[in-house]
Image (cartoon, rainbow, N blue to C red; front, side, top):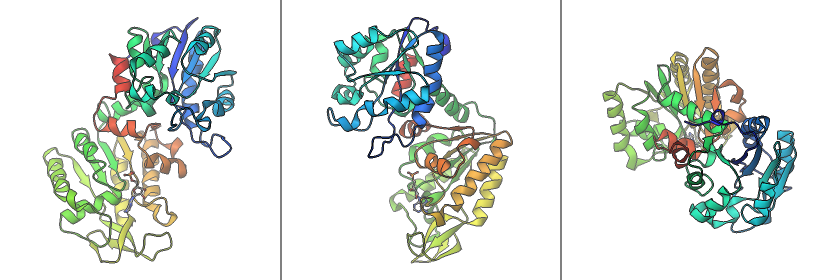
Length: 395
Ligand code: AMP
């Protein structure tokens, strides 16, 4: 696996695929700069080597050229975060861009316009990728958030740098974190999967059963398992057509010696709203008119003990409807347990969509070992897929 440390960037132009797909408000101000901050170590290392950086990214889902999706809106923010002047060029391919890239001096940074202003980017067009490749000497992929896409700038462009390509430090860290959970992690290894639906996590569960010693299945997903085993779940969210699959997963887990932990009790609500009436119920005895919306106290304690006994922990998906304050307690308790276990020496990785949001919202981001920057890319990695953006560098 080639990383930045395999190259000396002195007098070299690094063409870096970053993920600057950041959220903007109506005044085009960046509201969460995590992705820009995450790219900083790679950029600074190259500049310190005596190289220059050509940064390319997408922003949003433009249809052709649309000013609101221009990367010019983030130029100042990137400059602030890096502490280095950033030049912006209002295109990403063509002679003007090539001239701007050619004129870059060591220590300088050039930010290209939104790659997705060209449909060729998402199509993975080879000619477009070749045009991009003309801009730099070494290709660096540091965009984990798009590593699961075979786009021109994330995958195809690597073909034009058969020797001179590598992972940036963010992408390398993402890969190492996933490996720590899936391959090299100290046992016992625990995965906590929560969230709404079994159907969106089936492939992950099946893949992960070969990797972990314990699996906590929480959140809305758990009710399909409970109902499949004959429990009464009232109005709780359930996928009836996935009940056979749930039973099969339980059987597979037994064969593979994986201990599955499903909540034993829930906070049940009489309405899907923050100020609904609530009561604590056994998870398999929920009357009609009530639905399970969060993990109950006994479940939280059981999960706490499993988490504390684990040396490697993966967390994907909330344990309840955490967006509503009244039903966030189970997710917060789990975050607390994972933070405590991490403090005791466990390695913890949080990844995939809503759990990252929860971890940030409740202040756990600094208390776990690693928070992944990629939603879909993380989920596909957990499914056991080799992401095209990663394969292109390994090739
Ligand atoms: P996912 O995107 O699959 O990780 O699902 C995250 C969503 O699952 C969040 O929006 C949660 O509100 C939701 N969720 C978690 N537990 C429950 C539950 N018991 N009932 C309904 N939705 C839930």
